[in-house]
Amino acid sequence: MDVQVGDILLMKKPHPCGERQFSVGRVGMDFRIRCTGCGREVMIPRAKVERNIKKIFRNGEEVEKNPPKPSQDSSI
Image (cartoon, rainbow, N blue to C red; front, side, top):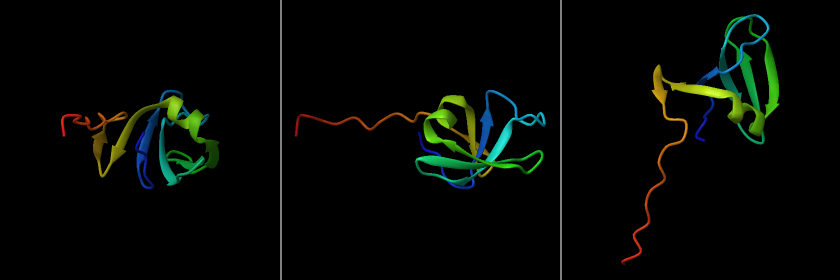
């Protein structure tokens, strides 16, 4: 899954403040995400974040969660 710093994630479950959008501050084995409603920052393991993402927005446009992989031509 292609998530980059600065992306906005729409999650399946809301934060306790009621907001479902989070901005990405760090990407790696753990994600640092900030709630866009209350500003709370949390570090969450990559697997847990990727499982709970509903949509990804980059520069105001929706990005595919699982872009198609390039096909490999074996007839070379």
